[in-house]
Every structure is written in C-alpha cells, then in structure tokens.
Image (tube, rainbow, N blue to C red):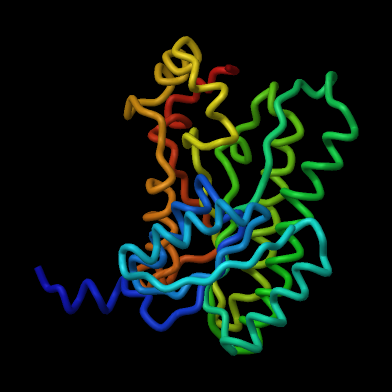
Length: 264
C-alpha cells in the first residue's frame, strides 16, 4: 500500500472543522472521525457533559479539539461562536451541520408546537450555520460544508411527516448552496443516514420487536452506528472527493434499495 498516497488524498491535517450536535450520537461519531484524520474539531452542542465526553474520546486517540456550548436555534449564540472561532483560528475548512431533533407523527395528527420546534432546530438552526460558514468559505475561496439529512428526505414516511418534509428542505438547501458556492471552490454535499442507533431512537429500537421488524428492511442486516456516518463524512470532506458537490451520499445499509421502507 502506498501510504503517502493515502495520506495525500485523505489526510485532514491542518484543517479547521466544526461539527454541530457533537455531544452524542452521529455528531460525536463525525467529530471523532474528523479528528482521527487530523482535523482540529470545534464541537458544538447544548449538553456540556456530552461535549466533554466527545472531547475525551478525541483526545485519548491523540486528536485535537475544543468545545462550545451553543444552542443552534439561537441566532445570537451562533453568531457569537463564529466570531470567536474566526478570531481564534482565522479559517474554517469544514462545517458539518448535524444537530437536529426528530418528531414521530402522521401529518393529520401533528401538533403545531412540535412543528415550530423541529423547524427551529432542523431547518433554521442548519440555516444559521451554513450561511455563516458559507460566507467565510466564499471569502477564503475554499471549504467543505456537509449537511446531515436522512433517507426520509429522499423517501418520506407517513409517521415522520414533518421530519421528512424538513429533511427534503435540507436537501434543497444543499443543492442551492452548492450551485452558489461552487465557483468559489467551496463544496456542499449532504449525507443521508438510514437508521443509526442514537439517543433519539434508542427507545424505539431498544425494543426487540421493533428492531427485528426494522432489520427485515435493511439488506446489510444491522442497525448503523455513529462511526458508520463519521467515517463517510470524513472521507467526503477530504481531497479524495474533490470533484463532488451538490450530491447526496446515502448511508443506510441498503434500506432504500429495496423500496420497501416500513413504517415502524
């Protein structure tokens, strides 16, 4: 194996990365993977205890990071973070918009209060971040933005009506931003996970009956883990994917391939 070539293509050494929702689950998996490939990672989240654990996992493997307790639904907090980060580092090479919440309900049974919460977090919170990251990267004429969407933003599920709708909106946001920032050397893509075990769904798939039902629709025969997404995202922002923008990368164990998503 030509290790020099591997390092040239996939190393993230010297790059400044930011991951939202990094205190647990997919966000933690992404942050750890980025750090393992050499990036310095700024960890954003509301749960400081969770951020501390992510920091610990990164540092014990020799990685470099720092954490910020930020609520992405509060625009002033997002603005303050970006200013601090630029003052400290002077560049932003990777921005991963991962933070989000889920909401299970059929559309006709949807509560408007829940709609407001998911719009504020999954859409407006994402928007606050990618706009600011995009401005920085446009000015420096380089960078990578990745939005973590969902296979439900590719094929909607009835009992995840509003969540699926917001994920479709995120996919549209990625395409629009990729078109706008491409001429400035900035790549914008999305990663659409299938079922990844996390705090958001542990109560569902912790039940054996639900787990067995879901596994029937996943050709690889298992539930995904946060590292499954982390390693993919770390590769997406590397030079190995330098000619890819405006693209959705599905990481779902083959669930959509069967075209038989089951409402669980």
